[in-house]
Length: 145
Image (cartoon, rainbow, N blue to C red):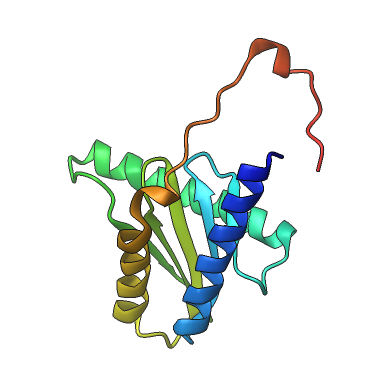
């Protein structure tokens, strides 16, 4: 990983932790690429769980985009899943990135959505990612963790 990539992840982690600290109802926050790669995470979320949440959020956002496209409903602004004890929110965060948060079931969902969008607007293009470039010779190269 390059020094620039490490700095970017640290910046994203700091922004996400700030969001979690400012909005008491938010348990966890992750920043992910559109294809589900973890870019940043809040402190209380270990890397494995953060990667899992990023993958889930990416799939969820993809399904919502597909539904919007199929039914002519336009671009996805935000997607929400309500569970027994939590909400999962996913919103676009710049070109090729998404912000996902896990919030308490008794959350003020308007406040959570507002704070997420405020963060995205505040840092805008700094959250954008470039699509992964793949090469044919990368297919057999194992990924190190």
